[in-house]
Length: 520
Image (cartoon, rainbow, N blue to C red):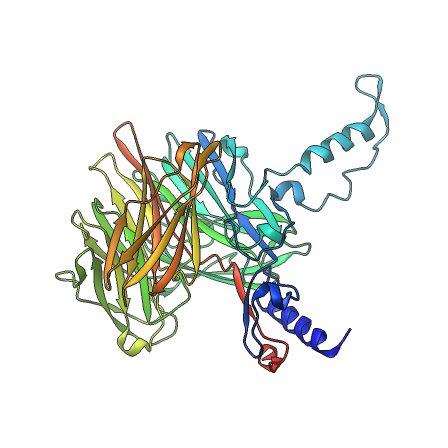
């Protein structure tokens, strides 16, 4: 092996270490269109996703969906598999004791070895496994037994791999439509918008994909600062398992608006908050984008009856946030909410009322000079009093190259796109359906400072659900979210998911470049 090849593999290894699950391998320079002295952008070759346990309700009906878009230059082989986290848990030390022997209760000899082998075979079966890029697959699970999922994709399935779980709960606390995109493991998360109030039942779901235990600290911040917690430090999440933690058990303080900070001491986890309300249903609250002096919360439904903004700034510095709404006509300042004052280390909430007033909208929050970092999310209500449903939209990351939303239907799907800083052109592709259909593609121009609910394409001859993939073509930055909606018993069920970049591509330095920067 020559020195040039060694240098290139060293760079790829460094990139894999930095990105966690994501990994790349030494490319074929000719196939990648690589130029001497320039970085090549290549598909990642390995990635992982984690899906929290969907529900504790016996009335829950859950659909899992998995999809990888067709990616030019991806490997010709590979797999994408999601399995139950419980099935992948490390076996109990006593699980296989007395694998053979007599069943004293029945007085018969039982072939326990054969039964255990059959059980292991069933446990090893994937919940979802992709067959080809460009075509989503789905699976259904009913009741409270639907599991958390842990999965990996490699080769041709790794670049842009996306998974989603959508749950409908017919009655009880949290009734309505709950959706969440499965996410990668990480070591830190912020969740503004949670609650420990008596009317709410909020869980932080922690999922560990690795073969060793993870140790997690959970910090809670209310209106007066950090809340005193009893068992929030040193929570152990067993290898390849999921752990739901009820937030109200961590503190005796009852507060309507709480910011949750998850810090992983050792290992890594996936994390999401499930926020359930006695009166207004519930949904998943994904993690906010990293603390920043500029935040975008995309895709507030145009028929929102109430919008409540919850924001938090770490540290001691106060900040006056400038608030603007990116509407179809451009950026406007909501009357009476031009600026919002945040005290350092304290969670603040602001009722913005019927903010969108019948038009698509996205919130743009800006700190002076971007000097004070902030995290934020909004809680949205739709429907009339007594028949309302809620959902959450956290501050989102921009779509740098490509993002995908799953489990779409011909009716009830709204794709909302905003370009707050400059005009942009995007391409939207509707995949084949899970049970049939032909992909369709359209391009759109998004004017600077606006939000548009675009008429997204639908696969021809659609059967089942389908994926919508958004690709940036020029301009930007671009932010997007997808809303799923239906009506049950006069209640407007809905769920909103921001579309983060799928991070399916990675820049690999040319062999002649200095790779020391990757070792910082």
